[in-house]
Image (cartoon, rainbow, N blue to C red; front, side, top):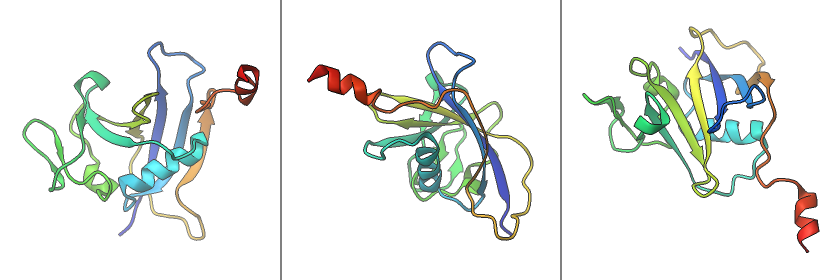
Length: 153
């Protein structure tokens, strides 16, 4: 039976700030990582015009890419699966002390950490998932201010 996960997505910066953008949203456990990518893109209001990748690990420095042919974690806690078609119920629960990480735009390196917050719940009728339930901090701007571009001309 399909369940709902509540995920916390936090923009990771080199110097954490109370203004860092954080979103909590509900998503179907049958959603793929590609669906998760699309949800994050819509919540930060980015143009989906760059490469992205998901990772698991205890921290950014210990992260391992999610890519392979099988859906499981190996003895070294490396996820074995196809990053685009893997579904969330195959990824969660993560190994102890691990998080899911999302990198968007390999040049600008927008880094997000993703945590599952609480036990699953049943979907509510007539609710469209993913569903943003809370947002705080300053939403990042993918390309900065448009005024800046006008000033350069």
